[in-house]
Length: 311
Image (tube, rainbow, N blue to C red; front, side, top):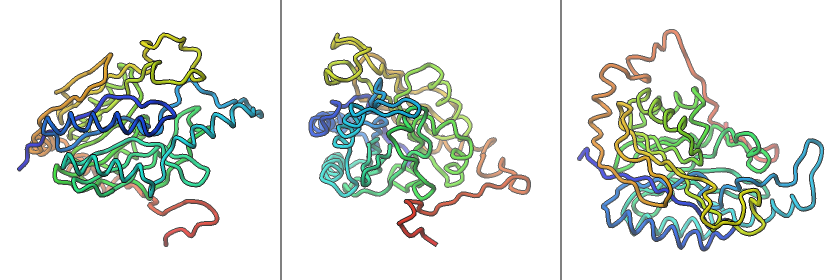
């Protein structure tokens, strides 16, 4: 069967309260289950949170004790790959009998990674993406991923890959995923701008695949009092406004954009449209010109000087 029900979940966490975030996630997964969704994508940094507005006490050549406490609080809200939160998310996928792609803040020792985790319909963790290039001040708190987590995962709804937020603007990363035959491109993000949606349409058209862009919708009510004071105290103030969309292989928006609320945005897709689209433009096939261009990707695990890298 080539037709599938897919969705993006536009939602925000309760910042620095991961148990509460998972409670809210359960409700969104149940809504998607009732709609017959077979693949659902949650936003960037959904579990663990996107600390918009925090500077973690950093200036050039300076750090503050308060900033170190902010980092500790953020670290505590993150999750371990072998921790109970991952098992809980897996149980959501199993209850839905669906594939889940979820943006998380992953804890590895004292370091944090902005990751996307893939779960199969049986609840098993089947893939992980660590963001290769945190943007601007994100580099203060997120470590860089490496080439060992660039999977395109075979699922019951097709070949699924992910690029996190501004990774989507890295042409060589895009080509790396195209070369693996990706059918459904998941783009967890917190970018709410119109230009982002233009980019999603371009990437769908370039790769001739479906793009599922899940953006957070985060209000002041979901942020603790000490967080993002510059946004004021009105609980209705949106810190991240949303704009989630689903795009087909010809670059046409088939669902969304959704603004101003949380919600499950769903569409029925036909994977035969991928083949139809690549008839005249297959950037990993007949349009690739491998006799002229080549791309080398280092897929070794680069976890640090004290860890043995794979041969």
